Structure formats: structure tokens, C-alpha cells
Image 1 (spheres, helix red, strand yellow):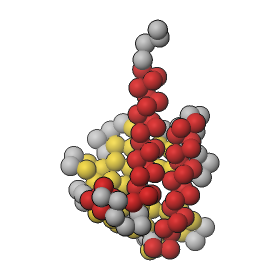
Image 2 (image 1 turned 90 degrees about the vertical axis):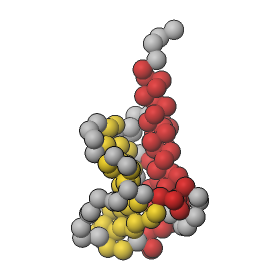
Image 3 (image 1 turned 90 degrees about the horizontal axis):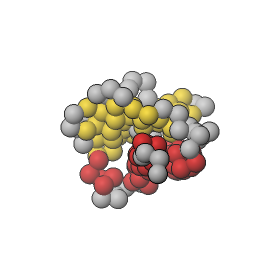
Image 4 (image 1 turned 180 degrees about the vertical axis):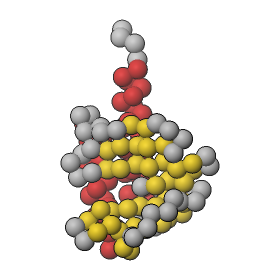
Length: 124
């Protein structure tokens, strides 16, 4: 998923093995995640939900960045890369068939945030 935000792009990947990563166009991000159960489960859920909308996606040969307020979903399949672009407002409102996938990708982000907050806490 490429998410066009006001100051750049956030890319979130989810793989069938449970690995997931977040990349920020401003620099930084989080890689892997497979060793953390919450991240792994969120990634696998997102992959499963991507299969539900795959028929609504079209073949992608180019990969332009989304505009602010757009979310581009990509699915890597045996037949190639498929893509769909959805308004962020539709995802936020729960409209359309991609809203569950959008929520699942947000769960990947949330799982990373929770993990990183817990990791940075000083021992008690």
C-alpha cells in the first residue's frame, strides 16, 4: 500500500509469510516484523484480505506515487502485479470493497507502533 500524505508517501508492505515493513518517503521506517506476533498476524490478515479484492485490481506496469489523499494498493501475484487506487476518504468512511484491506494495513502500522513503544520503555 502506498499512502499519499501531506508531506510525502508512506509505503506499507505485507507478505504471506507474515513479514511486514513500513517505509517513509521522508526517511526511516520499520523492517521485517515477522518476529513479532501482532505484526505477523496483521500482515497475514492483510494478505488474505488482498485476495478478496484482487479481481477488482488491474495489471500494473508502472508504479507512480499516489497523490495526497489517495491510497494505491498493489498485489504481487503469480500472474504479475495488480493495482487499484482508492480515495483515502472512502477508506476512512468505510466505503467500498477496499476499506477492509485499508484497515488491515493500518493494523500493521498500529502493531509496529505498539511494539516500538513497548521496546523503548525503560525496564521497571
